[in-house]
Image 1 (cartoon, rainbow, N blue to C red):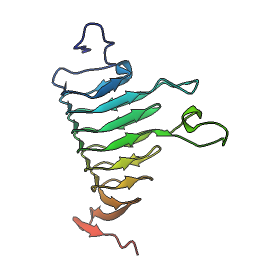
Image 2 (spheres, one colour):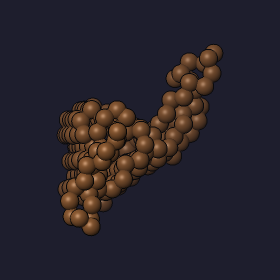
Image 3 (cartoon, rainbow, N blue to C red):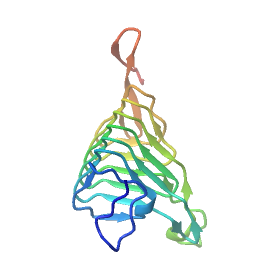
Length: 186
């Protein structure tokens, strides 16, 4: 079902009735945002579907699956595709972007350079904790925990825990042994 809470605002691409947004700071490009059932987006969220920048057009897809919780002050910017899997929890002050601002010409200001866009996919049942930054081109598998203050610059495999800047996997679930195994990153 499609729902718009303001008569004069464009509608979301997809919106389910049990979903809610509380006091957003900014939502741009609603017709490119799909929300699943039971989505909760809390105060001061900034969701941006970028359709044009520096003279170039984009076709963004921001897909938030069923049961996702996005806490306060989260910033998601999408010019290509950002997908957040079912029942994933994104805690406060997280940034997720599929955009790279390249500095390609010394005589052109950074904000006038065309964007590089690479899709981001976050799996289902993930926990993305405080102040995490997820960069363009990253895939995070299902059942992943990203520790607070981490910067994710590369793919993180399913059933793992990653921390740091850049984020590195410190534990993986071993299905054969049925236990979490510490990864030696030395």
